[in-house]
Amino acid sequence: MKEQMLPAEGKLGILLPGLGAVASTTIAGVIASRKELAKPIGSFTQTGHIELGEGKGDRYPFIKDFVPLAALEDVVFGGWDIYEDNVFQAASHARVLDQHLLNAIRPELEAIKPMKAVFDRNYVKNLDGTFIKQTATKWDAAQELKKDIETFKKENNLSRVVIVWTGSTEKYLEQTAVHETIASFEAGLKNNDAAIAPSMVYAYAAVSMGVPFINGAPNLTTDIPAIVQLAHKTKTPIGGKDFKTGQTLMKTIVAPGLAARSLGVNGWFSTNILGNRDGLVLDDEENFKTKEVSKLGVLEDILRPDLHPDLYGELYHKIRINYYPPHGDNKESWDNIDIFGWLNYPMQIKINFLCRDSILAAPIVLDLALFADLAQRAGMYGVQDWLSFYLKSPQTQHGEPAENDIFKQLNTLKQVLRGMMQEQTQEAPAVKRTKVTEKVI
Picture 1 (cartoon, rainbow, N blue to C red):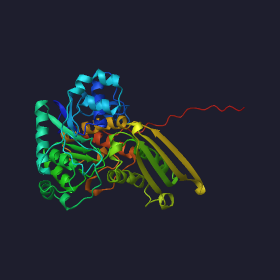
Picture 2 (picture 1 turned 120 degrees about the horizontal axis):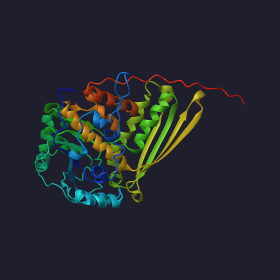
Picture 3 (picture 1 turned 180 degrees about the vertical axis):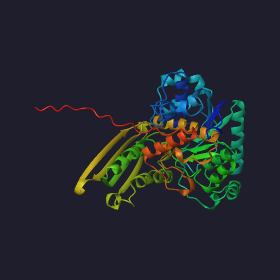
Picture 4 (picture 1 turned 30 degrees about the horizontal axis):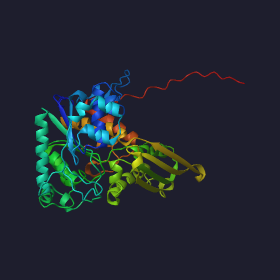
């Protein structure tokens, strides 16, 4: 694969459907990092290392120095939004980042203006877009998106483009006949089938052009046979779904530890408050269900009650998300975990995570975009399940069970990168034993 991999030459365009808090924080962070006003903390591609070698010496290069990723200096941002605000206005309104930092990069942010979005309030009831495309059919909307992509690429002299969905959570949808084949899906676009949400229109437009598409929301979007088939036909990387931030991040860290120690869990109650646009959208029951389904499967996949019925067979898992405007983007989550150990004696774990939703999501957006571009240049296409490390409800190939243990996910990601570059795994170093002198008091 190393010999066939295309170099990261020229500029890479990153298009983001939904230029709200997450997208504007991502863009501002990359620009600030380029100008050395801040550091891209949390980005595995920029600050992470990888272990190499076969026990012949320590080699821990940065990921960005090991695989040929697009450099931050070569990244150009754009996107669509249902409001006409430029990225400076969007970031200021989101109030995620300090205004002094935004003012320092204001010209660069103001230059990024949204294209009109494909939007239908039937899928996101709590938003009322004013900057939207007016088309007769969803097929026409897809054609307009293709023109947007072509224009963006031409005007910015780009060699490649990737798309990462940073838009809202749509109402809950299940797979139907219209999603089964490319032909049935295209017919559905022309017939304005209600089972085709706006995010699917974006995915279809991108993948039909050979543009990698990653779904950062719990929407069905790329997780349907028609888009998977199209990705194989056009040899395009796809992936999703739902950025792993906040409460689910904690679950994928804590649950593997409990399972590793064979500690039982009979209850896990999770609730959080969030006041940004995402919180507003999730205040609707149909949209919350989409998010709930995405979050609920994590514990079962990690703890495997089918294999350990005595430990996890009676697990009760409850999730709530509450819209609370005063907190803005500063999400606060509480977890109560009822566990039991030796001889069934009960214990509890309490977690109060005061996080910043967009601060956790921004590096994920960057990494997924850079890795999707890398995958395409390496000749990898279809579902990129090796990117599950970043996602709450990972899309997998051939309907295989998802892996939600974050440590196993990280190991898989690194193994794929080593495989790309034809490198071997570093052997674990021998344990160094320190002589201990006993002191009797």
